[in-house]
Each structure stands twice: as structure tokens, then as C-alpha cells.
Image (cartoon, rainbow, N blue to C red; front, side, top):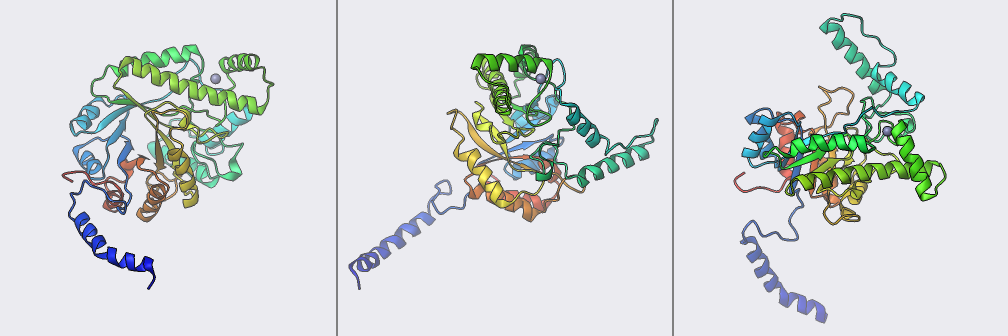
Length: 380
Ligand SMILES: [Zn+2]
């Protein structure tokens, strides 16, 4: 018997005593061997009744993002101990401008490739029209502002119009709106959404063209794709950070969070550049991504969360819609949702953001999945 093995055997009873002791420790003491779980769960979407709030609490939701107009829901969620945010999108003085080709693609997606709703359409005709548009979007693998299908990169655009948020006039307008929101005592924070470009890389409006010209002159840069990407990335970062600083100047206790959307294709995971409290970045979109991709993205989101700002915490985002109700999206079974959640946990994610759990609050099999991966709270 080797000396090392003898020492090991002498230590065995000690190891047994230590492990028996650990088993009697209070639940709040965590051991290394404990299964990883999510600590914090950010949920996008309305919570219209007490039953939804109960389901959210049972599933470990800690933070909820509600439409800014839902003040009654905000105060009710707050009474239940949830941290409450109002969602906030870009405001400006004109819409973003895309190239003629990009605008044609947007119209094609919006109209289901040229379908026309008859004048004075009946509700039945409207429903039929929506179904046909949806079928078209599904047939071309439209991904609604997330990373496009590889075959659609360079062509796909967002069907929703977003105001241009660049320039001093837009900034003033957004600060005015935020000032009002910050006065609501039921709000713990603001959640940014839709701060991105409709064509996933930039805007061609007059304001942006003038700002871009100044940027090139100031930095002595040529007009190249690289310069354009760097400029429009800087615009996104500066806009988010200026708005976040303004919110803090209004109320020092206000949290600022975000979901980075629509995607910025030159650098999809730029969110760690934003000086926010939590920055939601897509780790799993509404369409089925490989577990490897989910893990790789989570690592960037979490391991590099403080690369630019000491305040920021990484927040992996999962897109989930009920494909029976919302047909253009991929179906995610409870097993699939669990696979995505576990891929994020494996890669080190401990905060979670989902849009929208409203689509599964009434389905026990999905709630059971969330209960398995969330850290248990006292009393539940
Ligand atoms: Zn613009």
C-alpha cells in the first residue's frame, strides 16, 4: 500500500464526519456540490390578475417589466414584493430611414408578399389576412429582429417602425418622457427596449447623415463600412448610457435595465458596453438555436459583464412564445425550454430574462420547469 493511499484511508472517517455535518447545515449555507440555479428572474409582460402574479411568484420571478401605462398593475406587483420596471422605447422627431431596397423588403414582410386586405374588411377577412401574412413570414424564415436565418443576412429588416433616437432633439424628447416615469413612486426602474436599427446596422436619415459626417471629420476616417458600423455602434452605446445617467440624475435609486433589440449585426453582443444595472442580451431566440450557441453567447454575456463597466450584470435572455397562439414562432416544448435554461446555467448564467412567460403561466408543465431551475425562496 502506498504512503499516499494510507494517508487517504486515515482521512476517510474525518471526511465522513464532515459530510454528515454538512447535511445538517441550514439550507442557506450552500456547498460547492449544490446544483446551479438561477438567482434572479426578469419577466417581460403584463400581469393582469392575481392568478398570474401567484404563478410568477411560484416560478421565482423577482423582477417584472410592465408597459408604462399599466400603473395599477405596477402598484399591485409592488405590493407582492416584486421589483417593478416600466418598459421604455425610443422616441424621436422622425422615423428611422432605410434604403429603398430595405423599405421594399419591410413592405413585403408586412403585407405577406403583396397581399391586400379588402376595403371595409369583415373581422373574418381580417383574421384570414393575418393568417396568410403569418404563413408568408414563416415560409421565408423571418426572425422578427433577432439574428436572421443565415440565408437572410443582409436582406432581412424589422417590420416595426422605430423612431430615430440619434441627435439632440430625440434625446430631449426621451428625457422629457423619462422625467414623468421617474416621478412614479411604484417604479423601481426603467427597462429599455427597441433601441436598435430597423435594418440591424444603421439609419440613413438626415440627422444621422450629418452626425456621421461630423464623426468622420473629427476622427479623420474614410467613409467605409467599418467606419459606419463603428459610428452606429457608438450612437447606440452613447444613447443608452446618456439616458441611464439621466434616469439616475432624476432618482438615484432607479435601476436601469434593457433587452438589446433589434439585433445589431456588426456586433450582436455589444450590451456589455452599456452602463446599466442589468443588460439583457439574447442567449436563446424565439427560434431554435443550438445548445452550443446558447452556451457560447451566455459566456460572453456573463463572463464579460464587467469588461466596460463595474456596475453591469449580465442577463441572458430567452425568447419564448406559445407557437399555437403565435404561429410564426418555433414551438418550444417544456423539455426544450429546460434544455435552454440548463445550457445557460452550464455556461455560468445565474440571472434570467424571458419574454414572455405570460405565454406559459397557465401551463403547469412549463411552470414546473421553472421551479426546477430557480433558487427556492423562503415560504414557497
Ligand atoms: Zn437616423
